[in-house]
Length: 216
Image 1 (tube, rainbow, N blue to C red):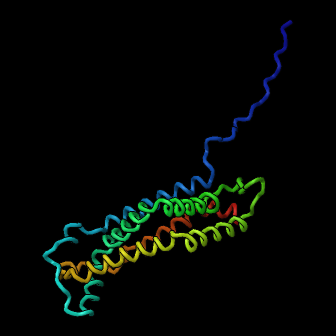
Image 2 (image 1 turned 60 degrees about the vertical axis):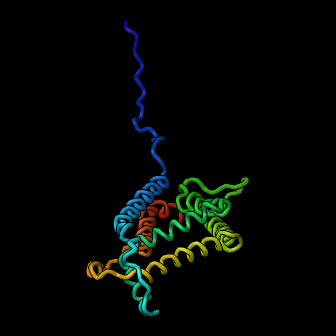
Image 3 (image 1 turned 120 degrees about the vertical axis):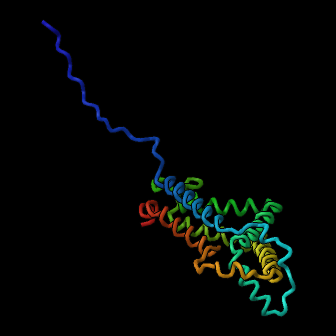
């Protein structure tokens, strides 16, 4: 008599996908990808730097109104170049002040990893205490006010931007606009405001899954 073989127990083929990143990580990666695309598109609109530094086109403006008109025309043409000058000025100011740079990076990472892209199933726990989303937001707002207004970060950023703005205005006032490029101006905005607006919309689109799961 043959021995009976016990029936094999059914094993579910569905296994938890431990390698799948949380929704917050996916949203953060999508945000970085879209931000990188926006930055590349903006940088592609920059004008050649030799054209910006052509000394043969520099001359003293005849009046204040002439200088203002030159600044407006040059900004319309060299918009991306001017914004890069301001950005480089700000970057160098922060590099030469590492404490302010660390504070600013700490503030940025706090907003990113503690609130904007925090996974839905991972509440913020500090010293054994669980913080709600409203409490986390309040702490981050207070921390932002402290970093910007009660440390040297705010004054450093403002002074760097004002320095870059002064360089841009000086260049725009003394560079005579060339009539050849005035007809090539496009009304579409490709400068800092449009870049920030596009990045903000991308951030909202990228964080919709996380916000819908954690902020309702």
